[in-house]
Length: 76
Image (cartoon, rainbow, N blue to C red; front, side):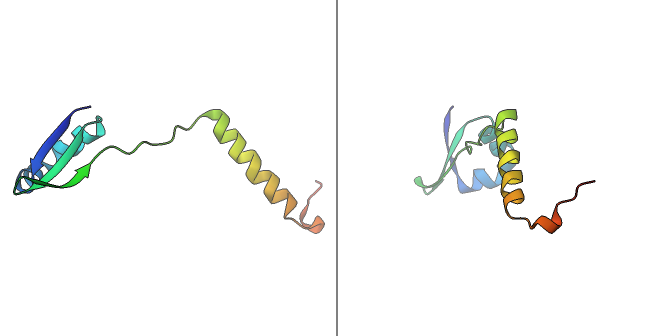
């Protein structure tokens, strides 16, 4: 990961390129008159695994089954 300092005018001019850089893991420090005013960095997205998906689906199904009336259960 690299850190780039960019002024507002350059940021506006190269927005697409800089955001692509952020997607690759770089961090951008936005400056105004050489004073840092903001930091743009990638978001750590949670990893989705098959196990996590299965456990989430099972929890939802269990909750749904516990919250239903007997008349809503179909036996057919």
